[in-house]
Length: 323
Image (tube, rainbow, N blue to C red; front, side):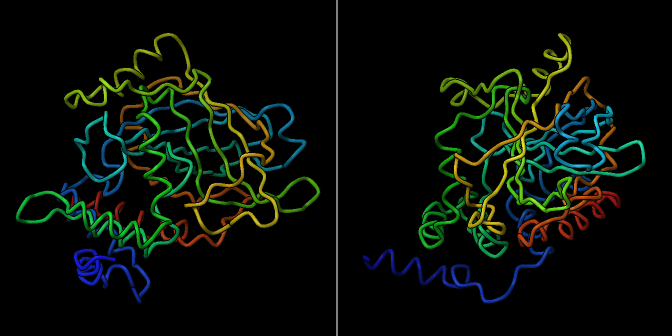
């Protein structure tokens, strides 16, 4: 290790060796330092829009589990497509995750929330490393930009922060929200019809196929196109995704969302998500907390997943009060 690298690591030592657990308010604060204050906006995934549609389980789903939204009934869906981060004017050709939030509401009033990303893994293994990574991205007051050397040093010291960045570097940003796969990234447990809990992750695979931007589009000046492209697509009819359950096996991590399960894991096609129209303000009052689960499902002990509820609640409260 050369002297420059050692000096940089020592300068970063508070972030590299966080002794205390991260708190929800720290995430709200660091997002404001990175992206600026945007009163009345969501603190994460600030740029986005609502949509509506439905979910219907495939015929074999009820043979697997009696979870209410797998009964085969057509369940109304409120959705929100979004860009990651706290910038409400985020460039839509950026190499950053896209988000999809869903709320399903069954006939008996049960709610099921999904909060998904276009990357199959999260940016860190736990809240502390994710917070540390975000802190390195706070712009330097002298330049107005993050110090790339600090970011690289933190990633080198915390290899769990590399997989998502590598995925984004290797895969083009989505051409449309309709040509994007979405991943649950966290582990949940679903009770099957024999009463046994099965650990699962879920993913939504676009019926329109996966399509990314060209290199020329990525390098072009930033423009807003995602909402229009989805609107243009919906003129032709509903855009759809097949929901798949990935069945975990012994040894597959239940608590580290930065680790992808092996590709050979069995998947079940469980349902069909249909988005039929853009939804105006349909999702404005919704907080897509992924820990809102219907009967027969429970969350894992993943601490990133657990952190989402209080962080989302704080953001939601600030948004409602115009902060």
